[in-house]
Amino acid sequence: MSRRRTEIASECVSRYFEAFLEMLLAERGASANTLAAYRRDLEDAGRFLAAGNPDARAVLDGATTEDLRRYLSHLDGLGMAPRTSARRLSALRQFYRFLYGDGLRTDDPSGVLESPRQGRSLPKILSEDDVDRLLEQAAATRGAEGKRLCALVELCYATGMRVTELVGLPLSSMQRDPEVLVVRGKGDKERMVPLSPPARGAVRAYLAVRDDFVPEGTDNPFLFPGRGGKHLTRQRFFQLLKLLAEKAALDPRKVSPHVLRHAFATHLLHHDADLRSVQQMLGHADISTTQIYTHVLDERMRRLVAERHPLARRATHG
Image (cartoon, rainbow, N blue to C red):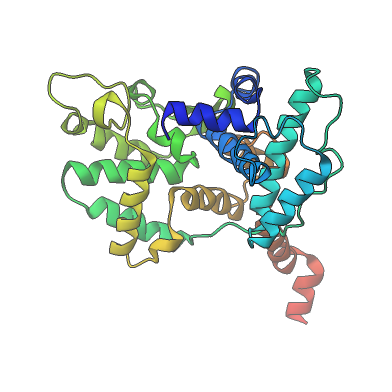
C-alpha cells in the first residue's frame, strides 16, 4: 500500500491513529512488525465499521461497545480462530486505553468485552533426533552457502533466538568468538545467551567465507548480510530451512525458525533446565509466556517419581 493510501486508510480509522502508533514506538519500544500488526488489526476493524458509509471518517473514535461486539461477532462468523480474534480485541483495547488515558475519550468501550475463549495450543515440537538430522544435513551442504546455512541453524537451535534477532545480528557480536552472545530483543532489551561449542565452530567456519555474500567494494554491518547493505531476510531463512527439511527427510510443514526456538526450550527442559533460566534465554518478559512448556516439566516430574521415589522402587522390586 502506498504511503498516501495508508494515510487515507488511517484517517478512516481514527484521527489519533498515527499518534497511537507513535506512542507504542516511543514508550514501549514496539518493533516494526508489532506496529504493522496493530495497523492491520485496527484498519480491519475500521473497514468493518465504515461498511456501507464510504464517506465515514475516524470510525473508531466514536465506536460504542455494541459496535465492537458486532465486529467480534463478524469475526466469529468468518470462522476466525479465537486466538486471532483475541489478538484483534487486544489491539482495540490498547487503542481505547490510549484515547481514554490522553483524555480523547471519556470512556473505554472495550473495557467490558470478554476475550474469545481459546485453548492454549502446544507448539510444534521437533525431537532431538529430528534436529540432529537437520544439523547433519546442513553440515553436509557444500560451499559458502552450506557454511552459512550451518551457522544459521546451529545458532538458531543453540540460542533459541527469534528469527528477527538471528538475521539481524551485527557482525561485531561474533568477531571475538564469544562464549556468551548478547542478543537485543523486543523493546530493545538485551539478554545474554551461552553459545555452545558447535555453534561457535559453525560461525567460525562461516566467517571465513562471509565475504562471498558481500558485494566487492561494499561494507555490511550484519553477521548475515543481504542485499543493499541490509541483512538476510527472515523470509529467506524460512525458505532455506524448508529446503533443508526436505533434504533431511522431515516434513517441511513442521520445520521453521520458530519451531527450532521451541525445540531449544523443550530440549533444555527435558535435560533438567529450570523454567526461569529458559524464560531469560528466550527473552520472555513474563514467566507465564514460558509456562506453555510446563507439559515438559509435568512429564519430567512423572518420570522422576517413577524412577527415583522409594515407593516406586519398592513396587518395582516387589
